[in-house]
Image (cartoon, rainbow, N blue to C red; front, top):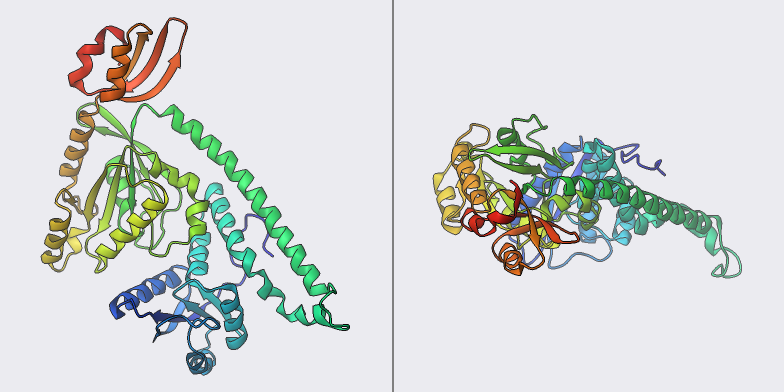
Length: 429
């Protein structure tokens, strides 16, 4: 077993065969696109793809996921191509994984396991490593049995064996306890990080918060760098950014917002990762505005938009105002694709973060949006003036409230047209 917090695989595979399955309700284009994304994930993990195959089926085989005939077809290919892994484009059950490894005698990895491996390789900070470690441990717990199948016969020997505890069973139980103990330790460490994040958020609660969201490799980090003047890692790779980064952005009308770059989303994003990255993704759920960055040049742009919306639903973030930004217009081969999307999202802005196209229009949009919110205000309102408090709650955004002996001290945002009504209570602005 790996040492706690070491999220790297000790012996990662180097050559793999990819296997996809076209189910009855899926089109072949969708299946091929998903398999192409799996290839990108494999290459990001440093694995060479030596072969790809797709099997049409009405439903997955409960034993092997693919059909038994397909298993027999792939067996000689594993040896012929010198593959040391087979990667499946779906999440396998523990039983399917165990059966496939026994049949092929090489590592069997499902889509979830591969994504976890990519995250593990790209986790640079302590927080990201903790989050990946938690996801890996929770993913591994129900799959531990496959590690000890060579000892299973010892648990069933002599006298029927059902009531005996053999070395294999003992080791398995020890292993499960080890995993559960480490899950508890990682969660405790993440709780400490989350408390620290909460303190940091409280300190900056007066400023409007904007979070960049989008499919992985949509160009969020590039746009982040353009708007903030920072140099956050921005690679043409999946999941280049795992850690949330927040910086101040000065808008033209003396406004200041906090812009956060967050981890990219992906179709079939493992629920273990969504749960493990909850602290990081809270930047999304606590935002005042989401900038949904879309790679408009990608042939599956609409499907990627839908995948991002699914994750936002998991985060209960669908009620937050959102501005869609069509990025990478400089890579478009057919302008008709952009026009079709613009018809569906008429308020979306089109930009090229790499080239700078459309950035002034985006800044103008942000300036206008947050001008309506007004500047942060500090007010001291007597308890006898309930109308002022009602006005703040009805037309503004109350950021913090402190109840003193003679007055309520309030930090809030209020549109400029209402400032005159509360000017007498203003402490500072």
